Every structure is written in structure tokens, then in C-alpha cells.
Image (cartoon, rainbow, N blue to C red):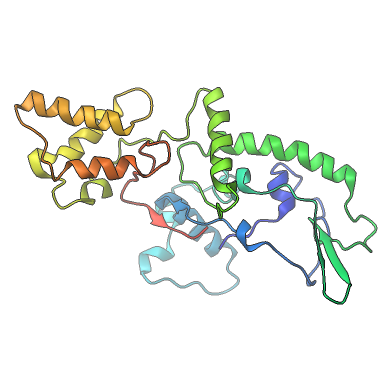
Length: 278
């Protein structure tokens, strides 16, 4: 699990030498567990960077299940400490971080208790500091836009979608990226051929590697590869070869197209991906 302080999420460009708001070692607190983000997949190079950070910051010992994993620097090349998180891969998805100001609760005995977003109680002199709240709002909106540009095409984290927070966050970010001329639903699929996509179905290689060839052809097509476009590619290839795609292969296209609400293929990944509950 990656834990990021709210102050950094709201303003990633904050002075690292600035004293953290309400820094303390221990305090009673409360959290909304449905705000936890999950489901993001880390790319292999990102896992290497995390291992490198853990190794550099280890006080005495490090351990791994494989000796090669103890030396992430061999695969990172010249790793510059200040640039390890230049693409903000360690950050949570800010589009799914609520901009709250406080949590208040009441009890059966009539008493009440609450904290603001930085853990300050009503007795704290800066409880619900409006000036900081306003500054945070401005920097947080800018941070969301910058994060979207840095992470376009990368795996996205999710939150509980009971109140549509997850789908709303994706929709707002995609709308912004489309206005910028980029669609986060489009993922570079050039590395897909030979990866997990070819192993999704036992008949994936039937007809001379239908799935692999289709994915290669799709990479040269402008825009997002939709379910209908995959079907068209399949049919075009069949006509050119004087064959028909196997009925057993067609369900692969259907399942791929159903992976996102929009029907776009958005979850194809190269073989080096490692899952993570981040």
C-alpha cells in the first residue's frame, strides 16, 4: 500500500522543506475506507523504481525472493533520485480524491467529535483554515490536470463506485484529455502482440495468429480501437486470406470490447506488468 499525505496530493509542487501541516506522531483519527484506491497495475519499470527506493532508504537489511531482485539499479540505468517519480506514478489518482474539509460525527450520548482534512480538531487554532483551503483548491485543480497529462495511457486506480465516484472521475479526466487532444482510453498496443492478449483464449493462434496480427494492424489505425473496429479488422483479414475467422475466436473480440463501459479496448498490457493493490 502506498500512503500519500493529503498536502502533497493537493500541491505536488510544494516546497519539500516546508513543515508539514499538523505533523504529529500519534492522534485519534477517522477515515473513509471507500476512498482507498485499488486495482492499478504497475509496469515492470515502475516496480523496479519502487524496489530501488526501498533499497536506498533501507536502514540495514533488504530481502527478496530472488537474488536478481536485490539489484534493481542494474535495470534502471542511471537512476536520478530527484527524477524517480517525475511521472507521478507514486501518486494516487487525484481525480478520485475527494476535496473534503471535515468529518463530523455524533454519538448516542449526545456528544460529538470531528476533524478537518488535516486531522485538526475544533480546539486547534487553525481548524478549518479557510485561506489554506482556498489555496489547496486552486493547486489541487492544477495538479489533477498535470497528473492526467503525465499518466495518460497508464493503468488507472479505482475506488468504490456505489455513488459513481469512480466512473465520474474517469469521465471528467477523459473529457479534459479529449479537449487537450488526447484520450486516456487509447493505450499503446504495439507491445501487445506476444503478450497476455494472445493467451486470453486457447484458440488465439488459430488461423495464423489472428489475434496477434489484428493487434499489430490496429496500432497503425488512428484513434481508439473500438469493438467494431476489431471486428472489421478481423473480417478484412479473412477476406484477404479467403478465409473466415473461427466462430470460436470471435468471443475474444466481444470480451475485449466489453472491458470498458465505452466499448474501447483499454486493458491490454505488455507481459511485464505486475498487479498491485495501490
